[in-house]
Image (cartoon, rainbow, N blue to C red; front, side, top):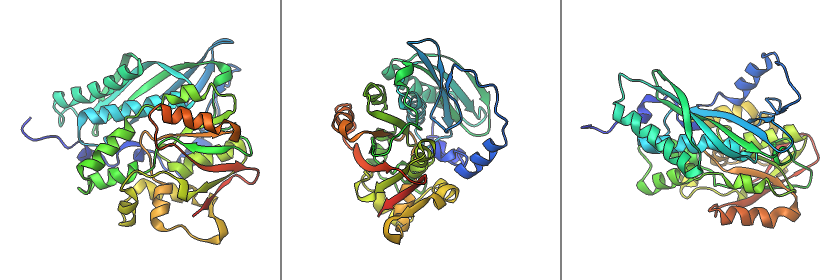
Length: 350
């Protein structure tokens, strides 16, 4: 190729920023009649969890999920790696171990050279090899925007499934990866992301959340989810609604990717951040009646592509949870808040 292909120019929105806004999605789902709910279905759509879980027998349950999106970066191999890491994360967030993947491929064949498409697929395959997962098939179509992702299947013991709706009052909240991927992606599109920032973005978005399988073995890890397109606030609110609890987040303790605070203060943000706030901002309050600075709100709602696990655990389990994170390469993992009895919602200590 004479000129490198810029994949992001084909995208109206990249990565998990492509998600349908939470308020719109809720309205769509509310109009959908529930189907048959057999006893084997342990987790369905009722709490907006990360994956479906089907009990196979007393020792095994099948975790099933799918995730795909348009390019968040220009490099085709990095795009494939990020998309595959993000898709497998949902299995880990349920406490499972991925066993099989199917590729979801949509490409504008008249605009992208076959070499570029091959690099996207190889990027995804490299992550699956790292996770020990075969890509055993898939489906491809010719579309206007590049789309890539996976159907991911995994296994978990039925007693080790970690839903987003089983948090308990008194739990502490641990976030596995720092926030800011959405801001970095917006900076990339504006030509304002330097090489160091890009390297950080790729590092965090291709860091597999397989520590989730280990965390699920701890009895006092009560709930897990991964922070993706709805931002930290959106996915924490799902835990609150499912568990019928109120959350408090200490903003000073929330880890941020180096440099994103400065970018957010300069107004760099994704459109998805504003849509997220419009969808759930009424459920977020600031302690003491204060207001968050606009840049803080941007990061609280920032869509995280392949973001970190958010873990709700008993205080007595905290040391083991942090040890598991730090020992698995998640050096930024930190306690960011807690859960308590109260009306489901989020209180931010800014």
